[in-house]
Amino acid sequence: MNLKSYEKIVIYRHRRKWTQDALARRAHMSLSTIKRIECGKRELSSDELKMFASIYGVLDDDLSSDS
Image (cartoon, rainbow, N blue to C red; front, side, top):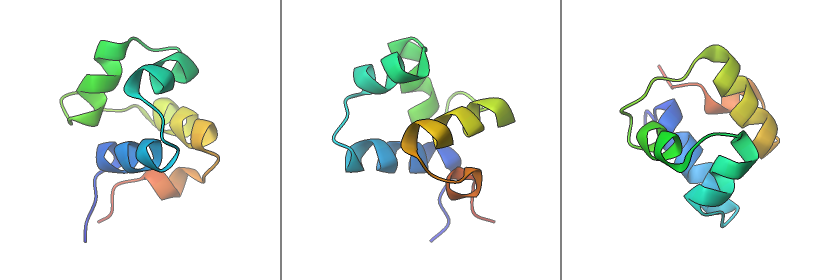
C-alpha cells in the first residue's frame, strides 16, 4: 500500500490519540494549516517533514511518501 506523507501524518496522530489542535500546538502551526496538510491540500517542505518526524519521534523516512 502506497501512502502519502500527509496520510502518514494522520496515522501517527491517531496512534497518539492527539487531536488536530494538539498537533497544531506542537507544530506551532494553525489548526487550518494542519487540516490542509492532512487532507493533502498543502504540500510539505522537507523542513516541515523533518519537524513532524521529530514531533512523532520517528525517522524522516518514516513519513516520506512511498514510491
